[in-house]
Length: 251
Image 1 (cartoon, one colour):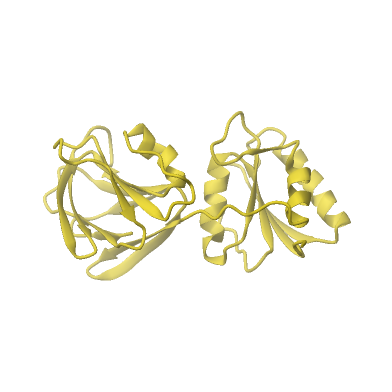
Image 2 (tube, rainbow, N blue to C red):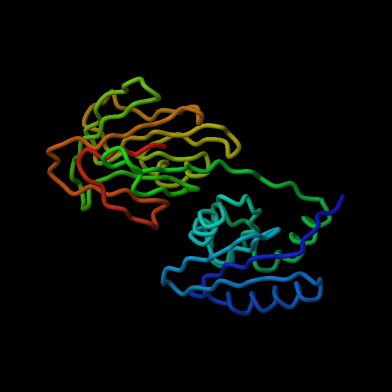
């Protein structure tokens, strides 16, 4: 059974060579199929696409473009066709020469959609939410700077896991288990697992090891007082938010 596509969204990183040409090719093909579309292009400068609804999205660029696209569309559950315009991509498996065949196979119902778990991250300050984020790969709490140890207290639901003295903590999805967390010694998870990774970065104690956690559990990370460094929250390596002492970050 085929899939009806009436409206599409194209998010493209124009810094990638030939990305502009590929967008024109996609636009022409969609017009022939009577599919309406909207293009959001950027060239290294942040943008905030306003997407109300669509049947699918094209992410033209590399893994970074897919991460940006996934966060933008997270609350709408719009399927994303990721087209790789770089040399290598962990997430972007479809090359610029394969997009049309992949699109046609999807519309014909020959391809299944790989659903990926995403993080919802909320920052509480004085018991009020000051910012919320979505993340496809990971969220990292660390010092602003290099090799500065910080102290973070962690709870799983209402159970204390203890205080971590480390360069920081990574909370990663199965998709993100192959990214920063893997470089920090964390295990690799199957993409469709319903689990999260809690991975300390260069912990002071040998007992602080990576943990695989049921995604239905709530992870609370508290920023302890009297830190010796400024602390930041980084989402997918792209969005940075400064944290303060006594902030609580909830995953």
